[in-house]
Image (cartoon, rainbow, N blue to C red):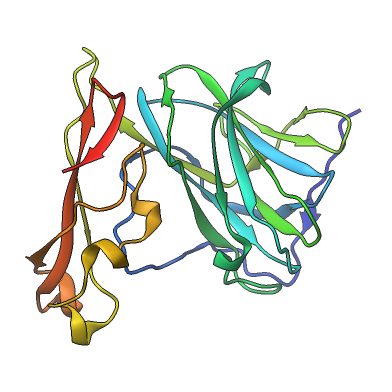
Length: 262
């Protein structure tokens, strides 16, 4: 018998809110998603976890995933997201990729609007259009994360859960999620370069800020290292008045099999 672990959200606003950071977001094209909240959520504690299967619609590197999350407790340990190949809608084999968000990065607490949290894969794997995969999450230690469910109806997969007895499909339920893929062309050609830019936080020191030291580590996705930043100018900076920004370009190396900063 299927065990439903959806908890009614009675005092939490239903609309998701994007975390706003003064950095460029990780690259990728929005591929699969469930974005409308049903108002229910699955608590993630030690021994209870949830996940979501999905069918990739774009062939390329899965660069990052967003989940709608609240933190009704005070977890001290990271929230980890895994990507698996799917078999019968459930995770199988070893993880294809994983990433963690530190507990301190969750600036949200109980009764605060559920927030879209970005999980960036530092070493992303290639997903293939038409192939099913599963996203699962886990944590260790005390505290709790709550992952929100969306309105059911996503045709490419379903929510899954593990209460300690192994993974099972949660029929008729879907997590709120978004997957982002850096596409690979149909003929296997190298993906185009990706421009990254961010505005130094301290407006008084834009012109003299060290880009390498102030760049967020989340920009080092796809196997790319830190560094390689240079000072540039952009119209969108300084509240649309134009100003100094840090800029670099990521290019994909076929020889190395990952992205490099140039």
